[in-house]
Image (cartoon, rainbow, N blue to C red; front, side, top):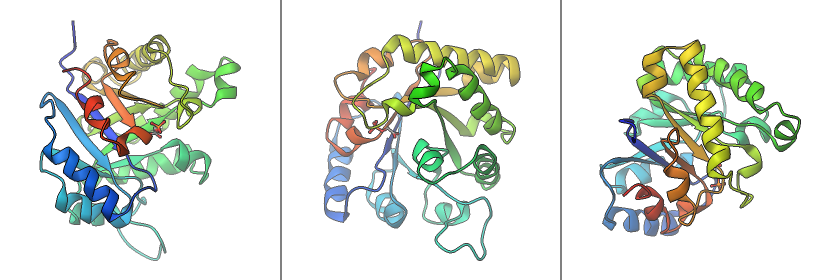
Length: 249
Ligand code: PGA
């Protein structure tokens, strides 16, 4: 039996595209037939948030890819949730592995960002995931539970949070987690939520998978009981993103 959790497909454009190519992608999405049982959100580069929100159909959400932990001030180069909302954008991706591992963001900083984004009224796509050496050392659970704890400590209203499990070894590598590997971690995360947050949140929170999701592998991944959608990088810039949105159609 499929759950009542609404399937959620996020695109993460990362630092890619320009007004021409993103404009073409937006036209493709606006004119495509999209399953209305799926919630769709596109993560745009900061400078294109306004462009993406102005041009994408209202049925498609927009996310920032990061934000800072306070509303305003002397923080050169940063953006705040209130600015994101001012552009009509309703989501932010926080704790992405590239923020953690390329830019050195700690669990503590990510937690503070999560708290402030939620208090400001944004929805949060909160990302977690183990590195290859952690998986090989058998510490996947320990790593993702600790990352989830740092997020959970900062969440009051889970209805505004989507948890994205993205094994670092699967991101941008073409090495997708198998449906069994994804399901195993998602199920454990849901049990962790049951034990550490609440029954109701464990049952309702969307846990989405990210890491080399494609049009070709999305149906099998998306048919797993505890996989409630995807966070898609590379393939979200291509027309095949439509097939991923419609994975459960
Ligand atoms: P990928 O990226 O689909 O290109 O592996 C996923 C992500 O980083 O969210």
